[in-house]
Amino acid sequence: MMSDAAGNDHVAVCNACHAGSIAVSGFDTVDPLYPTANWDGHPAGVTEGVQDQVHGLLSVLACALTTSANQTCTAASTDSNGNPVSWTITIPATRQGPVSAVTLNGTTFAIGPTATTQEKDAVYNWYLVNGEGSYGIHNTAFDVILLQKAFLDLTGENIPGATIRQ
Image (cartoon, rainbow, N blue to C red; front, top):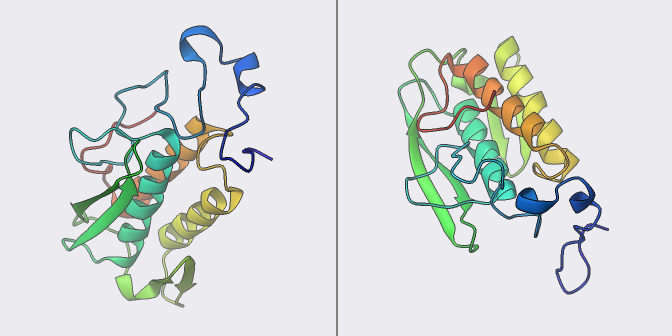
């Protein structure tokens, strides 16, 4: 169990490696290695924890999967204080495939017969990160890079305003 009934995160095992200046105080705290990172393209001045950033990336990728090129959609997450944050992104003109090929109902994607390889890959990657359930806690770099690359492969461009993790 990652947290107790009172909501306290069990981070002692994490801090066996993440000690000193990079010690972890909770599962949705700002990444001590990248304290100013903006992996999901959220608005300037917003501080998000690791899990908030990954939730934002999932939202951004869902937008890209269900929105046509040159159209806008709203991505959403929460800040490090739990307040809702939303922002508008414009899907790049280079987005692959017809948007009608992928729809989202809650957390379930429907993939139509005309879906491109990029769309299918992006849906798979979305399910992989969302279904694993740690939202970046178990392997922050993997989740962030996977979702950012899925957006890039689908749209031909990086997430607007995002710090691209290598």
